[in-house]
Length: 323
Image (cartoon, rainbow, N blue to C red):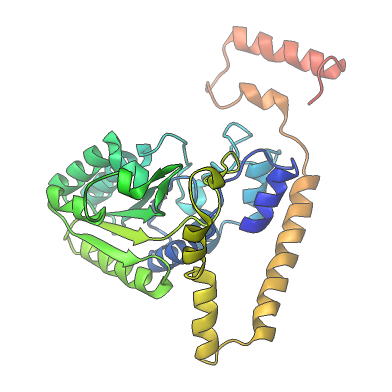
């Protein structure tokens, strides 16, 4: 799906996309280690987490396209999705804003004695934001059941990790706020799973938050608006491609006798077929009703807004404007 969405944007079939290639193991390990009732406060590169959580491909594609199946009614930019029924908060572009939200939700859960954790995801660049430090400080003071999951993919768009901070690791920033920081190989799905399970168990037992730094590499562009060839070398990219988490999982499964080449191809073929069907359905779904522009703001629309809605409805009915 990640590969296909990148292609769809290049073809003009969706407007924007943020690829996840290189970070799959970190996201799958995390998503598998937490529970369905736990709340996720994502950044904007969490497709693998969304899929593991069970969000249907069709629902995600509806949001990328912005059709009438989009629960956000086309009001968010593509790839910024959220679903209440999956405890998956809507993403937003400003970096770090989700961190303080996750801490606040965790404080509320603690006061209500809800046995859940909140998980917030961000990149290495976000560790320089105000919300990162404010969020970690509050979490440390109030001992909230929060997992801070930093996907250190080595680049904050075009700014390299070594120019981001003088700290030896990003995880050690947790020391200043009085709780554990853990560095994990983000290309190893099992290592990530173990680190997240330990953090979750500690949080639920009253041990407070954990900052996990998953060391990964963004193999693709930051987004479809980015050209990484302008700021990083082919040699660097080739070195990290040797650590591709998908290739690593395949090797482990084949070495253990749990997968062969025919089985691997079957997995890919089934995924392509499932995605193709979801995409066909999403592209056949009608556009968002323009009149929905007036919904969801007031319980009862005021007279002035009702008049504007009627005026737009007239334009649409007379073909002056097309949906």
